[in-house]
Length: 253
Image 1 (cartoon, rainbow, N blue to C red):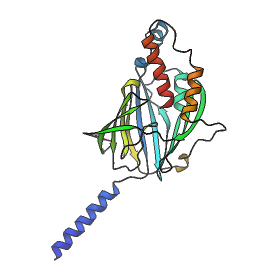
Image 2 (image 1 turned 135 degrees about the horizontal axis):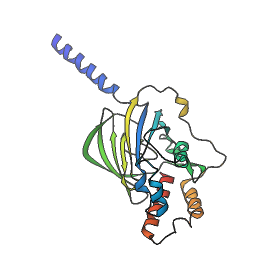
Image 3 (image 1 turned 90 degrees about the horizontal axis):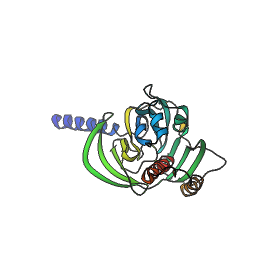
Image 4 (image 1 turned 120 degrees about the vertical axis):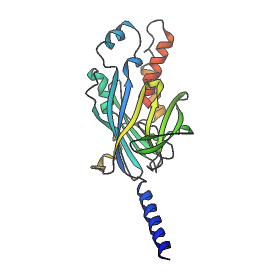
């Protein structure tokens, strides 16, 4: 009988240990890498600019979450990043707030030097979960393939040990937290580098306030109208289309 009690005690302790692994609040740090030169065109101006840029734009973001709400925002630049100031400003200003219980999102995005605040429902992403797995930041993650903006594929690794269903930027909707993400057509990857179980300041988890807010449809119509004559220079129509698409995808990611 004592042996049975002994094994039951071990089982209960083990179950308690496993239960503690499920996180519902934390701060996740992501390293974000963009191959900046691949996002640029091959015209003479961009070719000249490339000589003064680092190959990669490397930055760090934090994803703070608690009570099924989250905020994702810029933290700092890598000292290896060498890009003009105007290339940095949008990244430093952009903020993503999500309320997963209410299924609402609130974003601040800097587009062509102006900050716009978007208030809308959380977009639904079509996901296909695979059996491929890898470890990220000490967590066992499973691979999923999603599609955004109709035909842009994203490749994510998520863990169900973290209960919130979020991820970098506006990527979400998997049965757990996305710790690794790649968007090949934007030449960008996101990887969790560390997870802090203590939130130093949970007041950062709040929506952005503004006198004027837009839903996605309104802002997309406005931006497309204001930039309708952009990306029309030169004879390379396919490159113009690629540049316009990347501009819009980044604006609404």
